[in-house]
Image 1: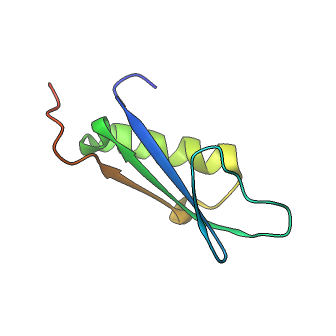
Image 2: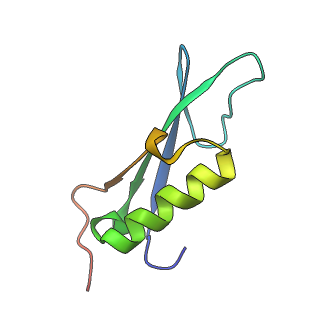
Length: 76
């Protein structure tokens, strides 16, 4: 996604936490997702990331948290 920069995604399951591509099994319920992205300090990027992740994982948008990556300088 243009403008998002480097992205790290953490998937939270009912009883455990996993990193990107470590998707929950059918017996485990996906309860939330944390997205850390360089470009998330821009509201339009933050919204697009939240909508995209919610759509791909088929979960409600309120279960997706998007935060800017700390210590990364973003150019305008």
